[in-house]
Length: 131
Image (cartoon, rainbow, N blue to C red):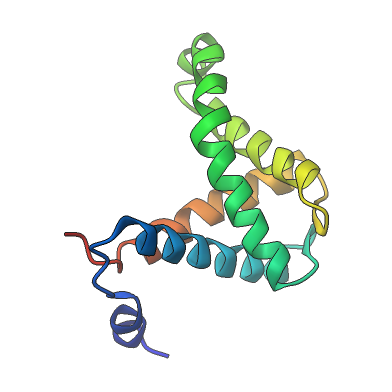
């Protein structure tokens, strides 16, 4: 499948916010599932688990992550922002804790998973049509 085909598939007119949210959850679930095949130490039981991981990560990123960022401002400044990779890895480990069927073997694997998830999400989300 070429990048133009992916762009056509994902370039859905998302005027309503619920449709865009559903598409973002599905895109994240697909990336989570793909990363579980690529990264040793990450496992996802099935497609439903991948969707649940996408939902839980979205909730954690919107509720818990801002609190963590505020609490870790001093160390984030000292490390010139590198500590935020650790904060993202903690969010992945929280998702591991809350979702049965999703497992991450350690903090380093969670950091790599988080980095790749963000990278692929930014690429795939760019195909969604903005209004």
